[in-house]
Image (cartoon, rainbow, N blue to C red):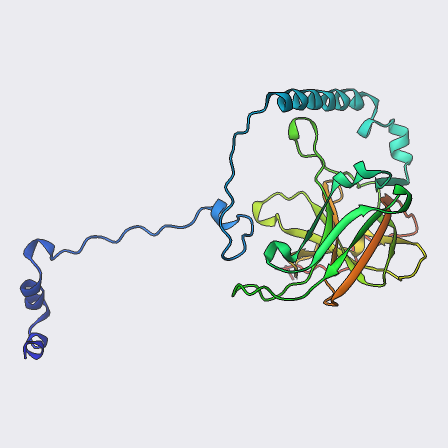
Length: 302
């Protein structure tokens, strides 16, 4: 047989006998390609779901005229509001302000400031709906929680519903932030069904890999027909990234708050409901705590 005979030949003679002379030198390896940052940090897409086709240009003359009017009106309010004081208020009123209502629900128009999501985005079966309460003076979030895991081969957990405020926009779609640095407590008036909720506050970040950082704390509803007023100091909120609590904790940045949200994921399947009257902030002079959690120094000098 020829195979044992070839095995006894030297390696150089084997190459010359098998390959032509002009192919002895192997071509250099191609450089390693690393995915760019935009591909790594793109939005979540459920396995098996086709990519969404986005058409960048959609020309509409009437909508363009309405957009120009809206943005120039916002620009006018911003320009003249700065002459009055911070956020269009007199300076003395801004300094002495102790309570401020950020969101209140006094009509169907107020629901446009919020968005509702559930695990249906990843193939789950939970349902969440948002509507006005009785007399159109409250917000009523209701639905059904289902913890069935989608059969896509990758998702391991499911069963959540949430509502989140939209990021406020200034003129020409510039991002606008809430400045709560003059306050130290979150003030809510809610009525739930006894389920525990998670309050999520998202702030502006400096780096792209921090876009999923959220500050969380718990909201325990009592259930029943009675309202409850909840006051949570901002020093109690802890930092998490994509649902995982971080070891390196730091106080929440109150000068650039983007959104606030309420999430339900207690693994108890069935119907749920949460009614919200208003969401605000206040200044509690009796609360002097700066941060409730220990912060460690990574490289201590001593």
